[in-house]
Length: 81
Image (tube, rainbow, N blue to C red; front, side):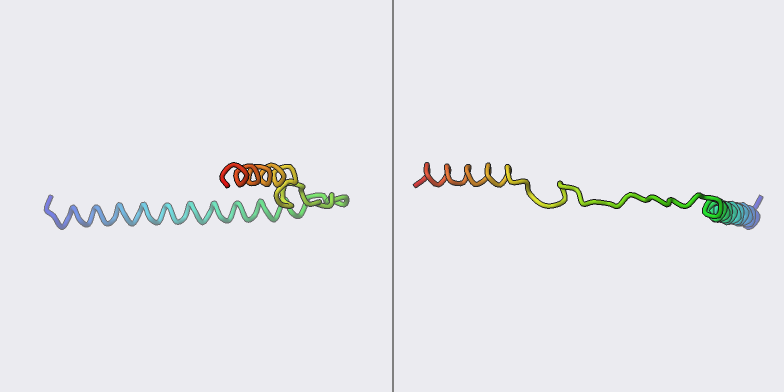
């Protein structure tokens, strides 16, 4: 085989692979979209959704940590003056 035939075969193989991957991914996206619509159509509405309350951890530094840090700073200042 000459170089032209090899390049043609490689191009055909590359094009076939790219087209097959594109078709597979398109089918996968379509199937996921269809399943999402189907599930949302038949899903029971959540009538009693619990209200989200903020967590205590998200409200800042706990008072015990602030007290411990303040005591450590006071002790450091007392020992280094």
